[in-house]
Each structure stands twice: as C-alpha cells, then as structure tokens.
Amino acid sequence: MSWTFTTLKSAIQDYTDNTETTFVNNLTNIIVQAENRILKSVELPVLRKNVTASVTSGNSYLATPTDYLYPYSIAIIDSDSNYNYLLNKDVNFIREAFPASATTGVPKYYGQFDDDFFILAPTPSANFTAELHYFYMPQSISVTSDGTSWLGTNAPEVLLYGSLVESYIFMKGEPDILSNYENRFKEALGRLTLESDSYNRKDAYRSGQRRINA
Image (tube, rainbow, N blue to C red; front, top):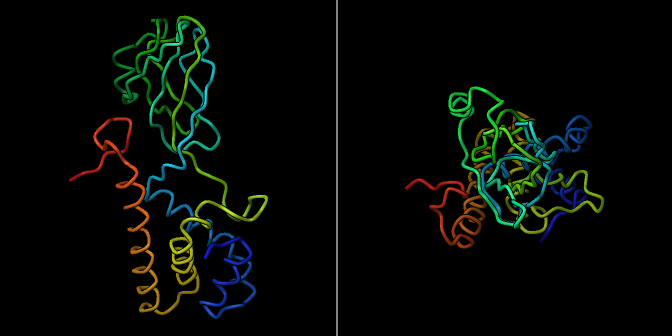
C-alpha cells in the first residue's frame, strides 16, 4: 500500500466518515501538519543533501538553502580540493572569540545565525567553495508534480495515522478514537525510527549525526 495525494485524501475521509466541506477543504493543511510532525521526529537518511556554495572574501555570512532544516557539516574546499570541516559553535562563542569582523583567514567555525544565514569565523580572507551537508525538508505530497512523496510510498502507515491524528484534532473528535490513532501513529513512527536511526547507522557518536541519548 502506498499513497498519492488523491488516495490519501480519500482514505482520510473514509476513516473519519467525514465529507463535510470545511473538513475536506482543510485536508491539505491536515496532511502537511502530519508530514511536518513526522519529518521533525525522525532522521531519514534519504533526506540528506549535499550542495556547494561560494564563500565571499570579507563576508562572514553564508545563506542557507531554501529547503534547509538543520546541518550535518560545512566544509571549506581549498585550492588542492582538500576538505576542511568547520566546527559548529554558538553565535555567542563566535562573537566573543572574533569580536572584530575584520579578523580574516580561512574559516574554522560556523554557527546558525538565523533561519536564513550561517555565520563563519574568522571572516573569509578570500573566495572559497563551501560544501554543506544537511537535512532538508522535502516537498509535501500535496504539491509534488505527480502527487507522490517518499513518505507516501515508503512510510504509508505513518503518514496515514499522522493525518488521522491531525484530522481528529481538527474535528474535535472523541478522545478514545484520537488516543487510538495517536498510539497507532507512535507505533508506526517507532518502526520508521528503528529503520532509519538504527539499521541505517554505522556510528551514532560522531558529531556529524544527531546524537542519540542513552
């Protein structure tokens, strides 16, 4: 079983026995909320991406990609094609260690300045190429050109029960039914987490991966 946007909307209406106009009109929002909950709860290897960008001399800021969610690593590539990986630091560390933006060199540190930019330190002394390895937010099944998505094809249970939880919250449905769907969602999410965070990991202690607490 896999879902397209059309078949998922139809299934939600069948499960909830609800074809009321306001509910149907909000199905896109309901599905997107479910997708966001899933994608922010489990680290899927398929949603890693590598891109390169230009670091400009004298500019300590590097723009994040439009689909960026959080980083794994940033590397500065030198003229010999060597990768120099930057250490991820808080912005306050960078500001204190490099109070003057005029301090230049090959960047050694980066921090998440805001949603749109990283801050690099020291300020680049020349133009460099940077490679960003990051976790990205994929297009919703509601907007893809073919009406499919990785979650809809590979994790249909999680997407269905996540959507049903959001549906019953919207409907202000019976607490026992909502609780049942929430439990089914968590069971399916647990299986997906086991597959992605356990079976697909080789080393869960490197700083390039999200940490797993014992």
